[in-house]
Image (cartoon, rainbow over all chains, first blue to last red; front, side, top):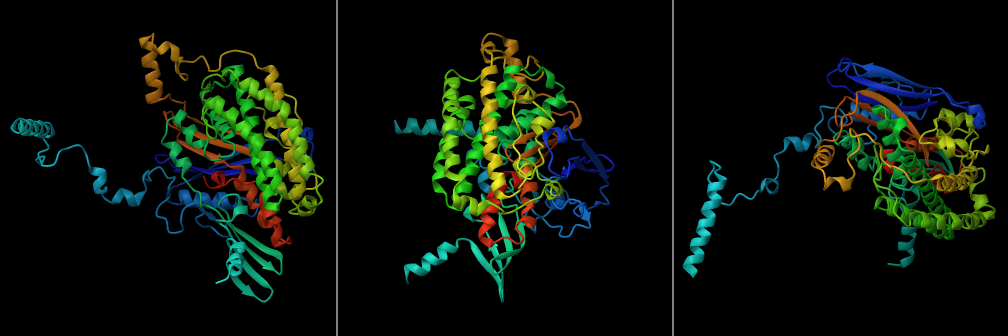
Length: 154
Length: 410
């Protein structure tokens, strides 16, 4: 049986992607632990170049490869030829980009493009700091002003 | 406005009628349905009450854990990985930790006590996970009393997990190279109390359900999967064993010292919801057998590998030695590097074969963490299993597969 279909993105390597199949040889009829024994486990790596990301589908052999292949399509953008209904299963249908690719930004492309909101830019730089950014001087000036006010009140 | 009409709408819950044609209807069940054990949407075509087609929609709980893990240190990644299957966090952590240990080539050097505590906690987690399954599955079918009995055992187990790791659900207790600190005083006494209490509680649970005519009517011959279909649909765990194939990772590919303990693999050949129920109950007894054996075999000893490359120095030495302090700082702030390579490690989680395919490029962060979530594969058989059954039995079939959506969607 098919244990798993996964994928790896090796960005710099040629071919760029690996689609990884793990297979397990199990008897297809009721079997005791002795009959199952230590079944053979096989790992199959299929290299996929970045400019031609098409791999034949195995859904006709193992129907439950369905979601695993959809997931790879969803997160890596690798297409499975012959898959009856290849769609995004994890991300929303209109999502942009393929999140598990190595060149996909951690915060997502939409946030990467938009400027950071004003509250995220706040720092402890006092108001009125000149654009030259001499923070230390501005801070000292503020402290001096504060002292002067204290003294005048006294 | 009458209360009756409002009550009627509420009773329908989140089952919506999408389309109606003559005798056949297309219904949408979920994703916010109490019996889908998470967020699963099932779109079913029914003719009268018989299911003719069942399509499922997943992805409502996608949190990008695999991507997050790629951006954390090797040790930190197990924190998010524990959150995949939130009913059996320790199985996830164990599988990940074993895989990384294989990459590091330190599998043979893990202290025996650490391995025993790992097995102990993983079997406890299996018990608590099956307790949640039994309780919620019972509620789905209308047997509410079971829930309290099952959750009482689970509460005891969570107390033990809290004692060991500090948190009830996600203790992050297993470390690459061992475990994080020895189990505290008083742990073993609580464990003994649980071991003593357990058989009577299991007897109660079995009395409540196993020969209960309503329970048998609702589960026998519902959602049958043959052994051939089970292998074709890549089922693992109790669902596969209820169809007759006695494949258990603990026996087939022993890890963490499972070969030292004596236990059986419960199997049934009927392949229906009742068989899956019995297999899980028997598994709980087997887990308890393993736990008692580990309890007897435990001896004092080190709990972390003696390898400065992987393990931080003992906390007591930090105040005394400058080198230990620097070493501790380095391990925490930069983590360690893992030799390049890839590895597939599997453990027997409560739901089936839980596997991690991990790729390292020699850095201090994992390059790729691919999970083989058992629920993702087990759940898909519903498409075939549901055909010809009644719509009322849909919740029985979903419950008998025991999916966890943190793991399906990750």
